[in-house]
Length: 164
Image (cartoon, rainbow, N blue to C red; front, side, top):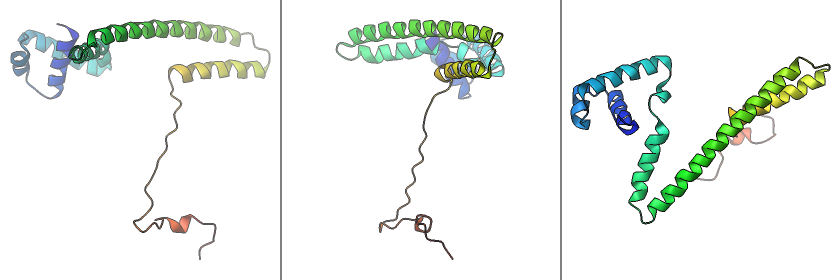
């Protein structure tokens, strides 16, 4: 069973379809659907659902089917796949380098003599975490505080004049 079929079976299981109906609709064996349901339930309990189906493959096959309908889509798909492979390789290289930097920073912790050295090592580790795990984003909340007659709804809070 390929990833595309697994994805379809799991999505139908999530929508509470019966395994018999899934097997009939997707033309797969009933035993395969039951086995995949057990694997899916185990993955939900273990928190490893993302390892059950290779979503990259599912997405790429969906993109490939959509691009094949367009003129010149095969060329675009080839270029897209090549660039994705390059990014994946670069990501692996970055992760290896980050692991080496982390190991080196941890070994430096054993030989620090001043607090300033500890600050530098901590800054290195924080920057590694930020670049690989956290995302630096600014979230802006915009409210529509104006009425139709161009008078602010919160006019009493917008000035420096003390209130009674």
